[in-house]
Image (cartoon, rainbow, N blue to C red; front, side, top):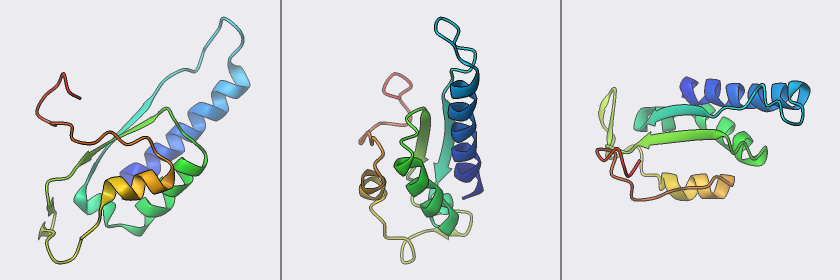
Length: 108
């Protein structure tokens, strides 16, 4: 859960610095922030809080890749994590792309 929290902070910093330093024709600060998240990350309360914040702030330059493989550091997540993560992120206001084969670089 800490990785997504850091990424949201980085995306907020990017937006803040861009507003402060960018000028017409001179985009000094202009980048995306990428984060990879797994099932274990999404079970942490902090991930819910910061993902909601990111949606509320409309941090469109934050890109999250979610590895929905059904496994966490403690093993298979069956029985303790039954979440429709895509629907949750849509509820937060994120743009969700479903059905991407994570083994296909072109699809990603």
